[in-house]
Length: 185
Image (cartoon, rainbow, N blue to C red; front, side, top):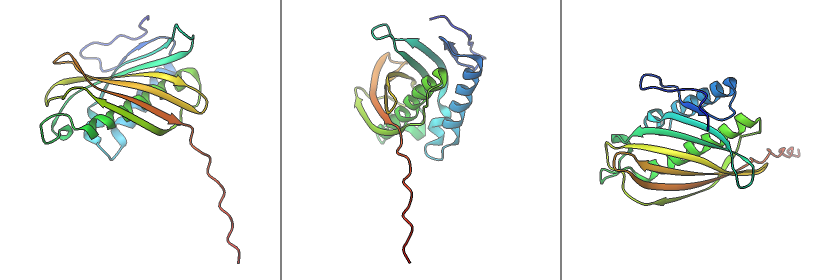
């Protein structure tokens, strides 16, 4: 994968890989910033996630386009459970929003619709994530159909070099609103 954008310690712009136009790159950055900073729920967690890498690639096995998005953060106080480790609910929240970004990236980059709603989110916890460690949230699309899409997420404890949480997020096209029947008088 050739990099089309570089990043340094002082540059907070993510590294982009693959065929992502400059306009799409900016749309991805703006949408990520909006999603991570505007929600009222878990704002301290969302706003601490830093978008580090965005890539679009063709999966060799079937020739289909896919996206990979990497966020990072340091586990802080508002993310913790009573045992001073990453709370399971916080992990699921990060899987939800970060995997959704990977799906949005693929839609933005390929010009396909990407307004999907969650259908199922399955999570497996492998190891605790202690306070103060740096984590990477790595998200890769798995399928992208016209009605259902899915992505897989891995949360890695970078400090201790271990996989801690995985999640599979299935989303679907939302149903169109049904017209309300008029009340009979």
